Length: 169
Ligand code: MG
Ligand code: FE
Image 1 (cartoon, rainbow, N blue to C red):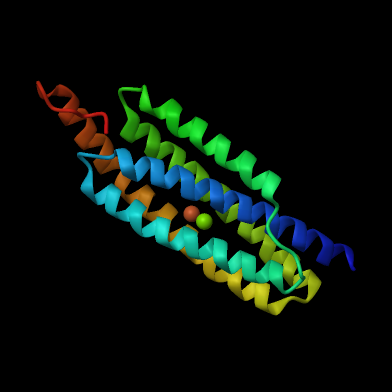
Image 2 (cartoon, rainbow, N blue to C red):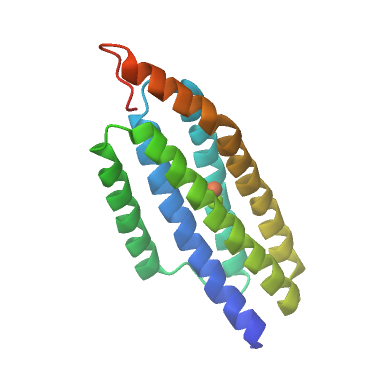
């Protein structure tokens, strides 16, 4: 196996673990949002995309007779749960969530760019095509968050001032 191919398989596994982590994190976030329906809806859409991305990565791995790494996936899940739990106790959960999601999407974007270059080096046109499709979904999510974070902050600050309103999530 060429070096590029060996790394491609390894990094596809990393991406799969990343998507498992994304799924956990997004589900935890969506489940807790009460007062920001637009954000909740966009996150729910991205959960569907994320689950599908995981399946597409599994298909890429299967073509090399490989399966996702269970150990890494478990570690990823625990990290995601830790992050979600950490956000629960802050009074500005919705804003912290926007920051965390924006950061996570950019980690995904960088990872898929690496995978696209590696697939190209390895001569795997199908994996390259799949990763380009996933990349577009991550870029769309990042762009949405970029566009909607100012409004979320505005709403949060307004609700924070109104007596009795629950601003945090
Ligand atoms: Mg993703
Ligand atoms: Fe994503």
